Image (tube, rainbow, N blue to C red; front, side, top):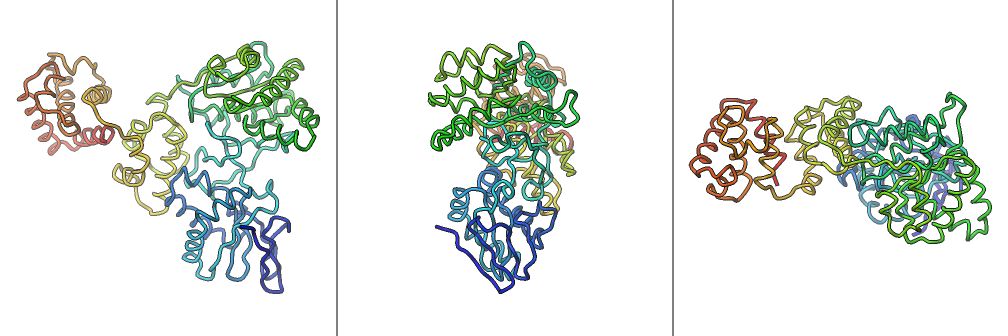
Length: 510
């Protein structure tokens, strides 16, 4: 469906096909074709912020980031308002999937608005919201803020503009070294990235190859390196940096071939001081693009320029890459980012909660850190969603509210609980050895957690009392019955104990 040219009253005309420059309101005054991030200059900026917040709650964090977050606010023409999107694909998708809902939300927010027009932004580079990067996404995808009390239209940032910015993606100032939470799983990769940022092209650190699972911080570190190298006050002066995803590298290369501008493409890439390629695994199976990257790689390294690459696996495990390229990638510094620990996830959540200005109880942070264990991006998104809900409705953040607001995310992470898992969680919570669960020790510091584990095994599994007893050192079923009765009694008289048991139950519940 093509966009239409809309005219209002004689005072002004809005061109919605992306070719007419700035939008004019019916009185002839300029309206920046931006969302509420445009310094609040648009008269409907506050309405737009509320609509975006409602949309985010309705469709969920992932859906909102993927399809809706790049919408920007355009002009008002009588009873119609225009929303801009940076690409035709996004515009057409949002129109087909969310057009009616956007119209209903606008009409509910501003009764005079009866129609919503979705159009291609007049100037993609000026009007599209720059995408803050996260691991596991391409540079063209919208991404969440590191720390924002209300993710969406209000969390704007100014992109860092590097040389060759027409070729590369912008660097996000929020993804700095200061904003990166360091723990044992990522401290080596962090140290390597710091070294490259301080002394690019150091022997043994070129190329720097960062690898790890989705959402663990590879892209954050890459942007931190780029930001440090492009600082105007950097010792020795800023250097030119080109950051892009492997997918964007491939598309740029294909476009250069089609437009017969391959030499210009090569010269642009090989003129930078630092080339950063994210998610290199996307080049697997793309033989021609791999060959071009190999020659670019060699030209830059031979010229003493720095290469930084990320992927989901180590170079030796990237089957499908040419052997010569895999060998070259492994000849520098290879740094692994391991899966997060519970302590690191807590640190990340605490940092984000503190930056948001919303009080999030430690029990809630512990609950999230236990439930969402594999992906930092999803962990941060869950907290952002929880904070947004608290801001919108003015309600305190509680365990009950967390389960209600994040039911879809938590459901995806639910799994069948086993007695072994219950024993492990309870042992970790009270800092006792796992073997104490089946030992003969009767000290209260051991016996009480063991009773809690038996109680939770009865509540959360379908195992019979004799079966549960056998898992706890071949104890009799009457011992299990006594443990269940004792825990229930203590929960009615000791609120702190009851809260601990409830927290464990929520973390384990399926």
